[in-house]
Length: 463
Image 1 (tube, rainbow, N blue to C red):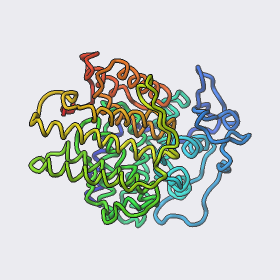
Image 2 (cartoon, one colour; image 1 turned 60 degrees about the vertical axis):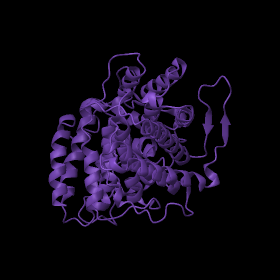
Image 3 (cartoon, rainbow, N blue to C red; image 1 turned 90 degrees about the vertical axis):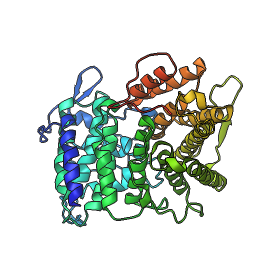
Image 4 (cartoon, rainbow, N blue to C red; image 1 turned 135 degrees about the horizontal axis):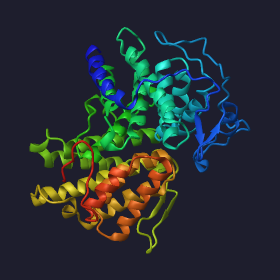
């Protein structure tokens, strides 16, 4: 844990560049929320006018503008069941709309594989007993609000600063509840960090999450669906985004995953976690250096495991709607829940990777662009991957699927297909502020539309 604290302090130092210290105690009458083209809204008006950004994704709201489940007093405090070593929270009036936004809107984006809404509900309750987790929730919500022009920059950055100031003391190994609190804290802060375009993303909290999960001295089964288990699988999926954008191995040590039961009967979200594990393994095989001497054997082993996952899926994973007209470039596929959509996104992405790298291995060619290693079967699977991503309107599934659509989208040479992929990425970015500009530039380069290619601190290799 001492090593964890030292390593993360270095990352946090870099993180301060985008979260400068600012005053965190603003007057309750301070008009900090900006709506539309500069209209100032007072805190009183906030309680009645502060609505969701996405009306079509919002739960039913009461006359106060808050969801029926959110009934905080403005000076509410938890007096019992405190978490040892952690400060309880008083929800200030100016913080109330921000925390409400986390519960109602951006928190659920992390619950795409959690029917029990462990982040939006369980973590929110836990946050009121622990200030470091509370300020992580506020920092994440504040970043989204700022990106939509609904919070000024200074106010948003003050929440980032408070989150960091509360985070560092929480790394103290003498606190018995450190692991319990830090696991969800790190993945929430990483989610906020991911809303930076890739070239500006320091990935500090991704490294921090890896350090915390490793230091916890615990194993994580796909069947673990408590707060810590859900946090772990969120962390792996966040890491997978970087894997696909940089074409590199997973930064998480997936050896800490308990793989004793990957095919037994389980709830549907557990099956999705199992697919997440297989996809992380596949990234390590295709984009890591360690397995190169046994590459073909490892690739066929993971391919067989993924086939078995598909064969044993519960009936709940079947789509309730499928339409594939001749005129449709990508079919429409609808599933019952977000965790079903996530499982299929990752499955089709994995099958696409296996198809590409099998062809590459058979040709014995280590050069050339990805399009040179594509056959019709692989292209069909890539089409299904994009179709699953495009067919679901939930923001969380779009966040999880954008990098998969980008990577598989590189295979298409038809201009109409390329146009649909570009339009979806652009519209999703406009609607949610999710940073897809790097994906768009990379696709334009790979498709020969533009010579510009910007991917971040260093460009990834072509396959």
